[in-house]
Amino acid sequence: MICLCSRLPPLPPTTTTCHGVELARREDGRRESSLGIVALFRNEHAMLEWLQHHHDEGATEFVLCDDNSTDPSARESALAFRRTHDVRLVLWKRRQAACGQICVYRRSVKMARSVWLLFVDLDEFAFARSGHGTIRTFLGRLPRAVSAVYLQPHVFGSMGLVDAPESVVSTYLCRGDVDRPRGSNSPRNGKTIVRRLAVRTPGPHHPYRADGLCVNADLSCCDFSARYATQADFPLQLNHYQFQAWRAFSRQKLANNGDAARLGFPRKEHGYSKGAFASFDTALSGTADVDLAVKRGHYASAAAALKAAARLAGGDCTWAPASIA
Image (cartoon, rainbow, N blue to C red):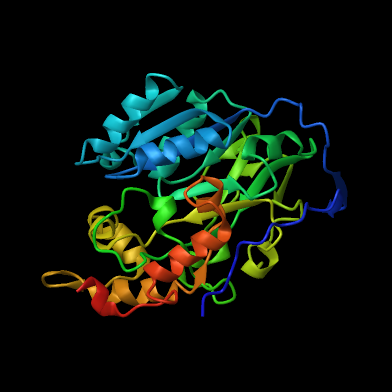
């Protein structure tokens, strides 16, 4: 059975309370809300789609840090996009940075000029759900007491593909079971949109230590233990296309021993285990989630997208490990 996740969410409550502070959602949306994106990347194939997507969500500034890519295509796509957009490229030499990713994030914050910054990876697509405009319009309606918005991840599976598709958003349509988070599907592995001037210590996942309040997208207090079920009506969502087609996944994720260990992949004599990949992939592929694919215009309706998900998944959102043999 495919669990449908395509209904239009209602608007969040006009007023809520966080740590004793009453937060009223602004209705005018005219206050300055410029949005910049800070991202690290290595050998990503969907750079142009990712850039265009976040530009459509209101981002006007991109600070991109190249983590020693061996494939020049991502960098070439970024340079092409830079001809008409504000894109800055930084070469991060991992071995020269004793403080790891924190160093490059600090440098990126100093380079940025936007009011809000979203720290995100190139396999993550943040967006305002149907009926809520764009991320930038959402930020323009936030009360001044809020300095950070935390986005819990929705981790998607590979749809059983071996080779990378032309479009990530239109192809990967099934994600993990929100009631049984596993590994990277945990609510604790999300990303944050934060006011640049409030940043103290940036980091890759948890809310950055900043002045002001950190809230979820519905203005409730940020709670890492929250389950995905609590996000059903959130106006913002983070799609994490982590388990992509096998060849793209192994090239991007398993080429680095640190990534492989973090994901729990056993090291084999002749490479990483495809069986381990299939185990994760199946666990993260039980729910059809087509909101972003429809919003980006890949399908005429949610019904059409759900039919495509069923077709790609062979009738449901599960498939056998043999699909990547």
